[in-house]
Length: 98
Image (cartoon, rainbow, N blue to C red; front, side, top):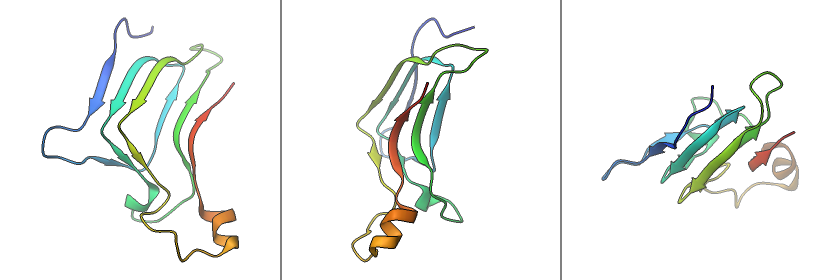
């Protein structure tokens, strides 16, 4: 069963929540706002998809997913990365499957 209306995940005033990544699979009516999404916040860095939205064969499509006012990054500062590091460590920001 899908949500009938939006569920919101947002930063409370004066707070800066940080997520490693967020996935919506076969989901409907989600809004994320004002979050920082970066794998550099995890104990061990791992290349990932920062926001992943996908269809699920059993649950169906993912629809009405809103991402707004969020800060997405692989790392805070990648200016010293080599070309190989860019190829192997940089993350995809928002991926939509199906």
